[in-house]
Image (cartoon, rainbow, N blue to C red; front, top):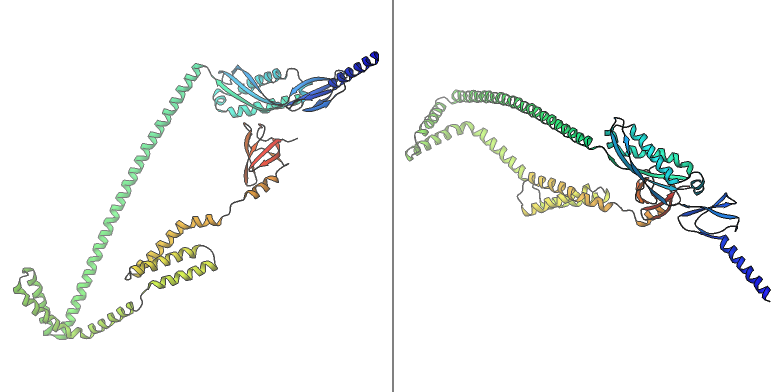
Length: 459
């Protein structure tokens, strides 16, 4: 019994050793390579796995997360022989654990030296001013070159950023003096251009003033000549009328006109009461002499004036005329919805209300009130009515549109920085979350929450 018990115990111990040797647990964010007798066979993703004990061994444990690599500072000679100190930072991620484990030795050192040499190559082809002002071009060039070089290693370089470009102190001082001189030059040019423009404008103003003054004098002379011409025509016509009256009535007309001129000559001498009787006698003589001649013509003119007054008073706008017009416009608005008739009806209602308060308001003022209220109501109410007519998309429509994007592969038109970015799809713009990627990367939509897309690198 003791021998059988010992055998069973040994068998259990061996089984436990085999289990512990064959069961492997890979943590999230890591990949393990498996070697059988020293040769790579497969890669274990995160999770629980079984391997053949004593035949399969763990080769390399590769970190699949995004890594930050600090590029040490180095001195670079630019195209114009300026010495600057440059340091940068690189962000990369292993996408193929087997290649990263067996295609390159000391991955960090390899990427660091690759970045250093390419920084010297890129900035050596640029002048100092270009290197200081075109960091984005430097970053994009370095990213394209280094990402292509690290592709066979199973590594994806996500970003390379130049942190600082420090020229020598004497060059910084010279650049400051150059900038100051350039600004003073621009200020002098602008000041001279301002003086020139001011002189041109002043001369143009004086020219226009002289032209307008000459035109004013010409117009005034023309008006004076026209007035003198009309006055002469009026005097000629009056003389002809007087001659005609004298020829028709003889002595009576002559006495009338002489009496009139005599009375007009006495008026400037004074306005005392002793001239009142003479003035009345002259007025009665004038009325008696001219009444007979103008009786027929004056009566016809009086009848014609009374007819015009009667025709002008025969039509009068009443307040309910405007309200009836407002009702008709509202009916047109309901039949032909366009909002225009609504504003006109508001103007008609306001005109009727004003006429109800001020009953003797003229037609011209009524039309002015109608026009002002119609235009004011259109300006004030039209934006609010348009907002009421416009509909807003519901959350259900937005969710349905987002669900249709799940699984779709898209190309980033802007990079994802700090885990967040934006992408334009059709006529809408969406917030994108996921690992940092450069513009032009292909990603797959994994999930949608509201107007936010969670993406992952496309296979």
